Image (cartoon, rainbow, N blue to C red; front, side, top):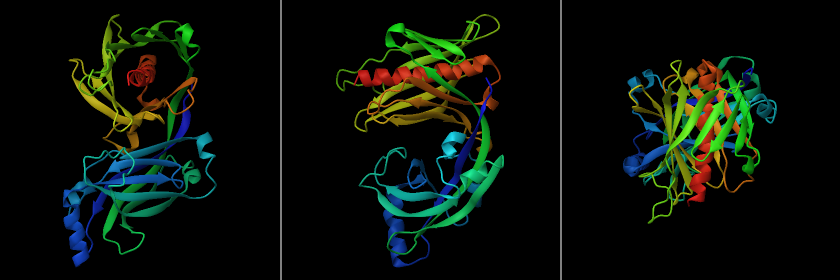
Length: 353
């Protein structure tokens, strides 16, 4: 299978500087925000695509913070077909800065309790970005403007786009009674608590094995973070043995109406290295993704669709894997097995709630 070309829009180096000036109003704002956490809501194409990220507060002379390398805080991925939905020319990239006064999560939409500090808008030409492998659109400070009133803060943001090759799978799930699913390069066989991904020759290339069942607690009637459902993703080695490649855990957040997923890569000693922590709407679904935090140009690893109960059930499992992280068919199969475990975890969390 040949990889397809995608465009990634990366937003990184996010920081806020406040207040501007030493007026009485600016001092009052600084004191009011001393107990708050700040985050930014990023909207693309007038809100058709949106994500959130935490903000780092820096002082005017904090040069060292910008010198340290950082991975993307937010990334949007678009296929060529999706890019055709945008009109020719620039689209709006709006960044809204919020102050949160409780233990809010940046992935959750702003609540009525959050204080809007203001916003700033950039123009991004996505169609032109396909002409270059990497294109920088902006890097620097922007005034955060309030709808009515002066500017009390500035937002630092870097924006770039890069073309990238990805393997894409749209795997048919088939009738429920068949207990079998086709996955492009493989058959995914769901037999009680395991999923086997086979290559085209019929040999097993990866397995997702449920190690902790999805059992709701008596007091909450839901899957909790204290006792999540868990899967091990296994790969075959040349010795004929199976080795643990990763671990997926999932649980529900009933108060927020979300399902949380935590994925860890496992070392030879089975120590878990946290790789991805995603909170996805139980009603609307979304996408689980893995992005490396060390390098802005090597961030994206994989993403997979997670269906929501409020939408019509899709007959396909959508998986995207960056080609540069695939060294063998077993690597590719492991990500497909992970996506299958995500899909089955969402079913189990909803069924147990």
